[in-house]
Length: 166
Ligand SMILES: Cc1cc2nc3c(=O)[nH]c(=O)nc-3n(C[C@H](O)[C@H](O)[C@H](O)COP(=O)(O)O)c2cc1C
Image 1 (cartoon, rainbow, N blue to C red):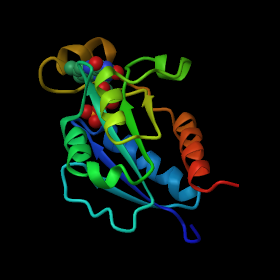
Image 2 (cartoon, rainbow, N blue to C red; image 1 turned 60 degrees about the vertical axis):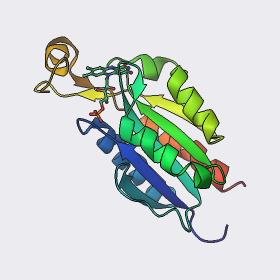
Image 3 (cartoon, rainbow, N blue to C red; image 1 turned 135 degrees about the vertical axis):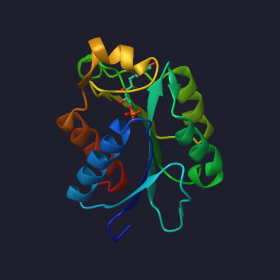
Image 4 (cartoon, rainbow, N blue to C red; image 1 turned 180 degrees about the vertical axis):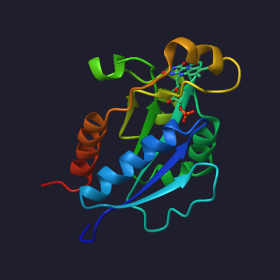
């Protein structure tokens, strides 16, 4: 790979937190010398010329975002030929910062289905004025932003090292 690696970041986000996480991943990829392309998982994506794919989705009741799941299913054939990482967002506490959290069973199965290089769970975000049931009730006690720039940048560094071996 002589040109900058082109990395597609597809994201499925219900309330914007995972979209922001995908933007942070994109910024870290760009800073590390990659050509980062962000796309909502629900939109058509062209994987031609892409060197690696990161699919990010929020977790709700232990289930990974439906659009992220559909993206993986839709592109499974191409993804099996590429290095792929699945990203989850995430716990509304500092658990993701304390430990490397294992993927949920569902995410582990999806990762296996495309022979993903790895999975990663980052802390999530819930706004105090979140609407909808049960998010509104949860927000009264659990609102906050646990997306961790430093951890995200470090993880992107590992991904890029995999793409550009020394
Ligand atoms: C109703 C509800 C259920 C949630 N369930 C989980 C869960 O099972 N596991 C988890 O890690 N985070 C859970 N979260 C936290 C969200 O995953 C976190 O807020 C995430 O960043 C939301 O992403 P989004 O803004 O892109 O929708 C839940 C949040 C809400 C509001």
